[in-house]
Image (cartoon, rainbow, N blue to C red; front, side):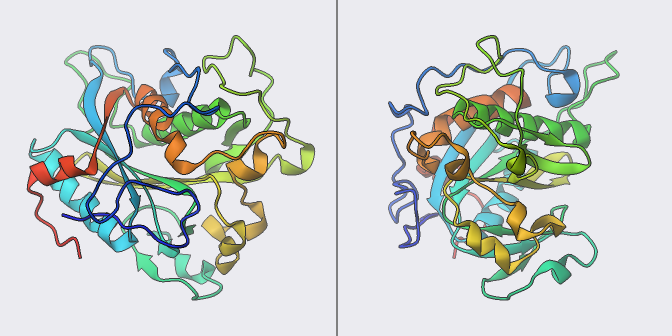
Length: 316
């Protein structure tokens, strides 16, 4: 099952997801963005999926490289069925997509498409119109949200607001790890650049590089978008973190109902004397930091592992 493919527009030199499904070495690359990272161990209860009496759940993290959106969408739905029936453990898919616009369930979301220059998919996730393209770290967690143990009333993995805050937290941790201060914005799902005075040597995340300063003009710029779906307590869809994304492509839409100028990327925000991170370099840290928030232990795995699941879907 050849899942991914290379593409001339790929900005990150992704090695995974080629026709023979060879994956990058799952060991962290020795770059400024993969050294010195340790996962934080304690979070506010409403910003993670930790539940008293539930052990961390094992899972697999798979980087597919550059893959057509429709193919990844069909794969997600097949994995939802596999996780639901116990055929597969929890899975965290990472990938990039060729240029594409997706539209969520929000009423009049299509009104935010300004130029039909890219293929468009209407999907079952929440949210508005968004853009995906090369240079984004796209993540699709396929997780079984577990019921609480007997006698434990709250918090719960099945609190979807808590699940969204956990995803945001993992991405904020990842931004901080590469030296970019990021935060939530009240009333707006996603991750936004912002100065954070709590970032210091005592921060729960040990940043691999110095935190780049953020000026006042960039306080409200959005660096990651999110939209999820849940079927019988199995999550799918997820997030897109702009790494080296061509931000001009967002002008085809009002991203999530905002003006395109609001979007930014890690490449725009890292300190000027540092090279921009690449999507493929972030995979190991992303799996660790998101796993810490989601109360999962993800093992980085080749895409060929998916062949062992005998999934029922059309990859074409």
